Structure formats: C-alpha cells, structure tokens
Image 1 (cartoon, rainbow, N blue to C red):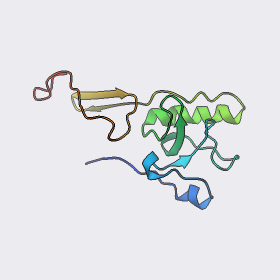
Image 2 (cartoon, helix red, strand yellow; image 1 turned 60 degrees about the horizontal axis):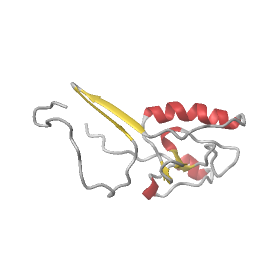
Image 3 (tube, rainbow, N blue to C red; image 1 turned 180 degrees about the vertical axis):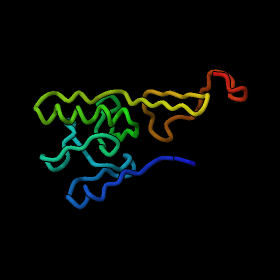
Image 4 (cartoon, helix red, strand yellow; image 1 turned 135 degrees about the horizontal axis):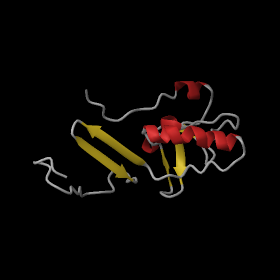
Amino acid sequence: LAAIGAAPRTSLAQAAGLEIADRAHGGGIVVDADLRTSDPDVYAAGDVASFHHALFDTRLRVEHWANALNGGPAAARAMLGRNPAHERVPYFFTDQYDLGMEYSGWAPAGSYDQVVIRGDAAKREF
C-alpha cells in the first residue's frame, strides 16, 4: 500500500455551484473564516475545506483527522453566530510499526532545501 497524497472529491460541491480552490492551494471547497462556502447557507469542514489560514497568510486544506474533528464543531459555532476560532497550527502524526513521526506547521512546496533528522536514520534511532 502506498498512500501518497489525496485529492478531495468535490463533484457534489461543483454541481451545487460552490467555489472550488485551485490545485495550487490543494483543491477543496473554498470557505471563509466562518467555514461558510460561496453559498452563505452551506458550510464545509474537514479535509475538503480550503480556508485562509491567518497565521500563514495563505489558503490551506489540511488532510488529517484532527482537522476534521475540530472543523465540525467550528462550523457549528459559526452557524450559531459564535466565533469559530479555527486557526490552529496544522499538526500531523503517524505511527508505522515501531516508528512514529510528528510535525507541526506548514511550508509551501519548494520553500525548503534542507531536511533535519535528529538521530540516526540508518539505526532507526531518533
């Protein structure tokens, strides 16, 4: 199994006439700070939502279950007229057998030229 990236399924949103983000911003359904789509009566949250992240000053679509977990309640708060507060730093973790990996933050493709490994990859000691 090789799971290398994902593309959001936006066919229903497109059929409904909702704005879709370009591929350079990860695709997905364009939402505002309240997770409202281009139709003011429709909200989107989770992996499919492409939102402007104030901290990084760019549009992001975060593909992690934690984003989906936090996005639903944020959209509900927005629907109730409360502050959705959906500006968390993107976070990801994975455990693959006896190894784990975590990261926080975001870097645009091509903006980095150095990979830092703390430990010894050959010995699988980190």
